[in-house]
Every structure is written in structure tokens, then in C-alpha cells.
Length: 545
Image 1 (cartoon, helix red, strand yellow):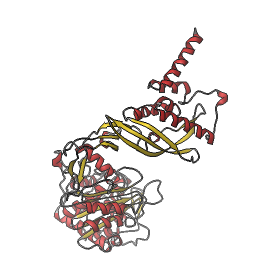
Image 2 (cartoon, one colour):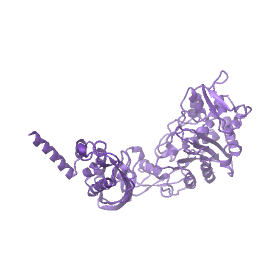
Image 3 (cartoon, rainbow, N blue to C red):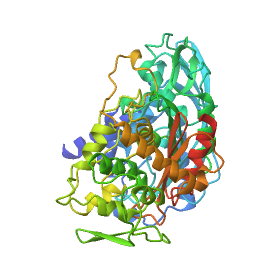
Image 4 (tube, rainbow, N blue to C red):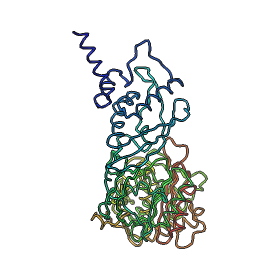
């Protein structure tokens, strides 16, 4: 009886796998094999990288099962059947993808590129689907069998962990996003706006009018990310969504960021807070311009200078000596290599040359100096509106300047330590500095959804006048002079570079203004502020200012 029962169980597993219908098959296969492949005997277990023949055989079996819609069999050829199974089921199920044809390319070691052609059909509507991806074959850890190393991108390159494919009525109607002057904005013409437009459609499609179409889309695990449309089977009627963007400035921003890898830039209108441009040049779809959280380097000195002025510690023409080094609670701070010390420097001079030691010495609280660990935080929040839960219209990070003690208090003052910013934050900081008024940046009108914009006290007219003049001096005779050369009108800027653990080169930061446009940029591992981020900002200001 015991042997008979065992045979029945094995036979049952085989029947489920052939049928390819049950989700439970993935768990059963995984439990039997220990690695989602077929169970092998101890003598059969292999080690080392898969051979060329194994790569060919494994990928062939996987492709064949995928083409036939045999999700369980295809999943069994991977090293994570429990994760692969549901996505492969969804491919032919809720995604309604049929007539799948997979054409392998020439393997490169254990990696196999391939192209997929298929048909998406839904309620009498059909459209072709074509794309390219790749997989890698690895050795199963417990079985020694050659298996497909499972990643969602194996099924489609747009898929990430937690995503799935769906075909049906779009979650939101299509929108025709337009700039402030009515110019249509598309991700084909403005590639950086792809994720932004997807989010705007998801959030405001039902408020912009129009009716949803039918599409194949990637449904992301995070609801805030919105769906990513892959194939439109039937167009909906687009609603019109007016943004604050300027097509002219956006075009300049798109072009500017392509000059350097891992770059982001944002431009805002200081008189209104409206975002004029947002662009990223990255290897992923992450909107670092709005969501990045990185140390801003010496661009932070705008806020630190305001803190010193507002608390009566210094003024632009008052003393701010710039020694070679400054020690704060056992940590020694230095200036950029080659900077000449100046014991008789004013705050304006130390600002325009970006002298770290001057700011470290001034941030130190004494009997005559009222500054505390909270002073910089209070200034950032109450005057510049940072950390105030901004509601820009899309997902954004509104900056962080935590109250820090010990060496981090001094490090925060020069944009290191625990301070976290992105180009959106720094463009806003510049806008507040030159106008004296904090106007929370936004991408779509708050009237569209009745959201409340963040507020802050802003700066006194005297403090704003001093900050603006120091930024002017920096742009015309300081560290930003080279980047801002040739720009007319009322201009000002501040450079920054931030050291990041594990990087050989510092991140490059730059923020500036020209008339009624403020812009800020960041380039990871771009060097000094004027080296990479500076030219990006200057190009944007030239177009918009």
C-alpha cells in the first residue's frame, strides 16, 4: 500500500504538469526538485558553469514551453518556479498574449538574447507585440541542473519584481499633456517626461476629461507609479492636461543632461513656483530630479549663509575668515585643493570661493553665537519650506536637513553629513533665496485636485538681498564664473561637490538663476560643481531666462 500510494502521488504531479493549469504545480515541482528543476540523483549532480550544450538545451525547453503557453513547464525550467509561474500564467491569461514566437540569438557565454513576436487580443481587437530581451542560464544550487536564472525581465524587459502584465480597459483615460502655452508634450519628443507623463495620466486622467482605451500594460507593484502602456489596442478619447512646463526650456533640459551620465536638472519660475522643466539622463526610469536623496555639497551654503544672517552671526560684508583647515569636535575639515587661505575674508568672499572652513567655524555656537544643533534645520524648514510635505502633482522628495550633533552638525553646514537633496529642492532654494518668498514648486495646478501646497515664512527682504548679491558675485567672479560665462541679464549661482562613500569622484552640483528662472542640476561622479552640473544649468538658463 505504501509503494502504491507513492506511485499515485508522483503520477498526480505528472498529470498536473502536463495540464499546465494549476498554480499548485509550481509549489509541487519546487518541493520535489528543491530547485524548481527535475530531481536528479546524487551521482548526476553537476557543478560549475553550465556548458554550451546545457545553455542551448535549457533555453530551448524554456522557450518551447513558453511558446505553447505551458506556464508550469516553463516555470520548471527556472530556478524560482514560484515567482516565474504566476507571471507566465498572466502572460497568456490576463495579458491575453497569444501566437508567441521566440527567436533565440547567438549566446554570449551563458546569456541568450532573443526576440519575441506575438499577438495581443482582447474583445475582438488585436495588435502585434514585438520586443527583445535576454536570459541567463545558471547551475541549480541543490540539483546541479542547468536552469534559467529567473527575473521578471525574462518575460518582458519593462517588468520588475512585483510587476505583472494586463490587457483591458486602461486604468485611466489617455491624456494629452500640454505645456504652459498649449504645446503637446510626448515622451517621444521629450524622453525624460516618460515616467512623469505616465504618473500624470494615472493621477489626473479622470480629471482631464476623455475616455479610457484598451491596452496591454505593465501594472507596477507600487500604485503610485501608475501603469506603463506597452500596446494600445483601441485608443481612448484623450483629455487635455495643462502642465506648468515650458516646451522650450524642457527641450533645452533634455539636451543638456545628455552631456553627462547620471545627470538630472530642474528649472522653476521663482515668481510662481511653477516647474518649467524636469529632465534625467540615467540608465533607469527613476526620476532623480524629483525623488533623488543625495548630499548637495556646497550648494547647501545658500541655506547656511541665510542661517548665519538671520541669527545675527554674520553678514555678507562681515568677517568670515577662510583658514586652511577648521576642526569641529575632533574632525578636521579642509577646502578644495588649491584654495588660498584668506584670514581677512568676508562672508561674500568665502561664499563666492566656496570656502568650507569659513562656514564650519561660523556654525560653531558660542556665548556670542546663538546657533544650536537645530538652527540649520529650523532655517531649512521655516524659511525655505524643506521637509514640508510638498505636493508637486507627482511623487517627489522635499529635502531633509536633520538636526545633527557632533561632527555632522558642521558637515551639514557644507552640504555633507546627513543633508539630503535633489535638483528640485535646490532650484526651489535658489528661488526662495532671490525672492525672499517660498513658493512650493508644482507641476500641475493645485486647483485640479484641491491639494494644499506647503507654506513657509520665507526670508526677510534684507536676507534675500544679501543672498542674491552673493550669488551674483559667485556667477561673475567666483567658482561659477566659467559655467555662467556669456549669460546676460540678472544672473547668480552657487557651485557644490559632495563626497560619497565608495566613489572615486565627487558628485557635481550647481544651482543658479537668470532673471525669473532658477535651475539646479546634479551629476553623479561629475567632479566639481562647475565641471558637469554647471554647464547643464547654464544651458537651461540660456533657453529660459
